[in-house]
Amino acid sequence: MSEEPALSSDEKELMESLAGLRAAPVGVSEQAVWFEAGRRAGRKQSRVWMGATAAAVLVSTGLAVVRPKPGTIYVERTVVQKVEMHGGLAVAGTPHALSTGASDYIRLRDAVEQGGMDAISEPSGDGSMDQPSMRALSPRNMSSAPSPWESLNTRG
Amino acid sequence: MNGPGGARITELFRALGPKLRLYARQWVDAAKADDVVQEVFVRLLSSGKVPAEPRTWLYRCVRNAAIGASRSTRRRASREQSVAADEWFIPRPEDRIDARAAREAMQQLPEQQREIVTLRIWGGLTLAEIRDVTGLPTSTIHDQFRAALATIRDRLEKSCPKNRR
View 1 (cartoon, helix red, strand yellow):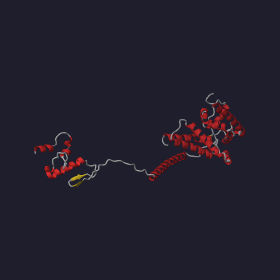
View 2 (view 1 turned 120 degrees about the vertical axis):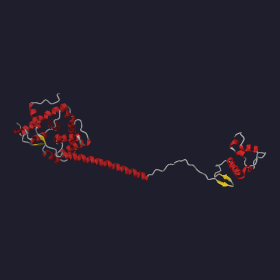
View 3 (view 1 turned 60 degrees about the horizontal axis):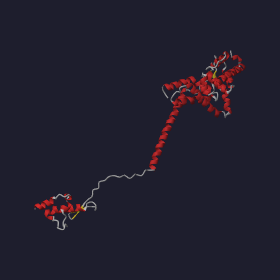
View 4 (view 1 turned 90 degrees about the horizontal axis):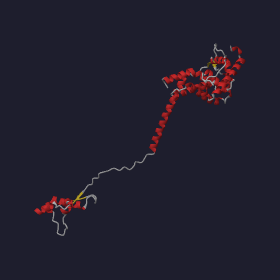
């Protein structure tokens, strides 16, 4: 079949006559069409803004009503302890702050400051000490090397 | 939508507006046909782009919109009377066929034939384009068109034989 209908001359003539009739114009103007299109576009935009505003209000209200609890935060902190002095001896604020050895060392240091070398007695023969001994406290004493105190005594 | 797209739509409105309105008039009254045409062009402007085949697209949209609108207007019998009273064409002295007689002859056609004649003669669509718009097979369109022309000719000869030279 051809693309266009095969028409007789009568049919063609009738078709041309009918085609000569002019259709009535549209009752709306171009301006009205453009105006309507613009109005709808504006309405759509305003709906978008209204929706965004409503969502923002909902979220802020929700946040105001249901506040999340603050979580536990761990921070590193340097604690400075005050050490009180009792009778020339430093006593730590806590029992664990200074070990017994350190306490002896401080006592010995204070005794030397106040009384000089004489304030320190020799260790007794049975190994017990009236006063704290440098030997037991000196960090050098930890090793087998002789302490400065011993060398002093030897010279004296 | 501004620029070349908007200018093209304005051009389409000027060229096809009355033809689309006439096509819509197959289903609805004059006021509703105006609404349908306006609605279709507003939709085209809102879409922001002119389709590849704007003429076919516009006729298809007008068809759908007019058929949809006719479903509500059909419920009102008084509206139907006003549909019949509206003019479809602008009567002019140089017309070879009386506009009112042509409209009356058209109105007596079956809906499918009337639609095909409107699309072919005043819309200027090819058979393939009519097939795209209506969804009918090309052979059916061809047969219906010829049958419609024969019916119109009979009606015109009976109603006002003097108008036909």
